[in-house]
Length: 471
Image: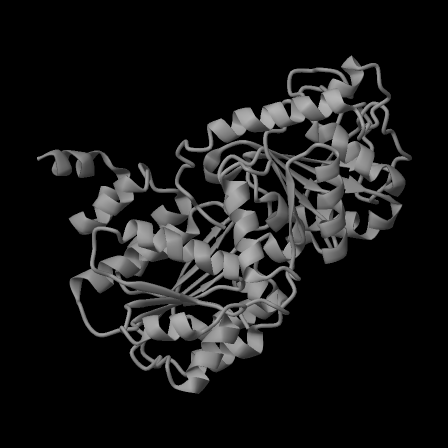
């Protein structure tokens, strides 16, 4: 009786899912389906192909996982019967975790395969014939070549973050994998953006698909994003200023190169911030420890390259800071999509210099509107004209983080430099200021003490390098 009452109150009951799956849905904290789920789940349950275009963090994993679990639970047969392709190890791991969470009260088994680690454990798991395989293209082809992964029983294939797989050069690998699948199957393709190459792949892959397009080219409305014009030699001082604000509870900082990410993380650590780097030269164990520490709030700042942009799904990230502007307009959408997830609000700031004019012009053209410009007191720089009707430092004197004309990271109209102002500073960070470091560590300890709180639905969701990913 209690179970039936729980199921009846859950918005996912509308889909007619088995009670064992609904128990997993409720246990995962899902109450009402998200728009991408409402639009795609019925079609997937009916066996139709699906093309889902939506921003990161909108619930795409459950959109394909729930129909998959429903089919596999009702008709038990030897696996693998479903294949989920992901571009990065982090994303594959997160997809696996969410499917396991939803399937916890079923008998469906899941295995994840990716490169960077020994294949021995993965081969052992595959020999148990799990129903679902989640993996990266490189390792999947490797195990296919060894004869330990057979795809002739696959009934459903999912391509998640398809545009990112193209960015990483996986398109030839994808075609080889798809060619090895049975011709009669269900195809589900999900992506945040749709470049012409992926459109061509979709046209050849999908048969009369249900197409759901939810404003895929624009950032989510929950993200308050803006540009800050700053000289290159003042970026680090500006970053310290923002991270020291009380409203900045946790942040992902994106840099352009691996070396820059590693060095910046070290510099932030020496300045009193609990920071960790995440970049492609790290071993899988190092990457796992970094992500685990960030999720558990052992670190407040994660400094990453685009390689991690699509593989990070951490609830409650208050800020995304593009220390270096992204290389493409699509990368901008994916980067800032690490905040404002699961309908929570978030803040994204992009530091721009005169070298970023071309990117700015292309991004505003792709988004179809002008990105807000803000300034931070003490960090004013020469305005940058994108040629799209605005300049990067703002015409109305807006500051770096106030929706109401406030200051860097103050939404209530505070001053331009926050904590630096109270210390009489000029907006520059003083790394040897021991009192500031102590306050930073104290804030960290307070946040660490609350790390055991539930982190929400875990809906998941950059330009990464292929090297070291899914090999």
